[in-house]
Amino acid sequence: MRMVDQGVTKLTWIPGEGAIANASSPEASELNAVAAVDLSCIMVSTYEVRADGSETTNERAVCETANTVTPTIQNYMGNLMLFRDIVAGVPGPDDLTEVYPQAGVLGWFVRRIGKPYDVDYVDGDVVETFKFLNDVPQLQGGTGEGYLKGTVPLLPQGVFDIAAVVGSASSSSSA
Figure (tube, one colour):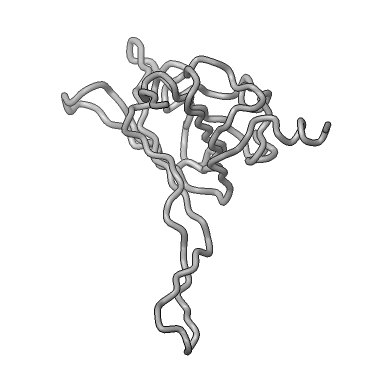
């Protein structure tokens, strides 16, 4: 069934290296934690977080008549574009300068597609998990080209899963 991509994507930032114990089976309690920041309504739709082309090795045997390309190291990338949350000149709690106060915030970006964005994560949800370290936030303003916003470049930290199942580790261990 086709689904319109509006209001059915939940985006969450969960700060802390150990905030998610297992990228392939995060717990609902980890994803719904008090420290988790719901980015769904402050993210500009042109953000980009995704798996990227893998590194490859291109070696062939003497007897092979065509090149071979074998994937080796997987890659992923991230670049968040967020609306600013400023009231009377003061950044609010969801402003990107509060969520990412400087470079070097380690955490997890989690995306769920298919349920309303305002529904909590539950066991059985399929999510994407990406471990990142943020680079220096790049603030914008004064251009007259839309709302105040900023970009947060994300640096991959070696762990991601594009089909993680919430609560699968605990449910499979009890079976």
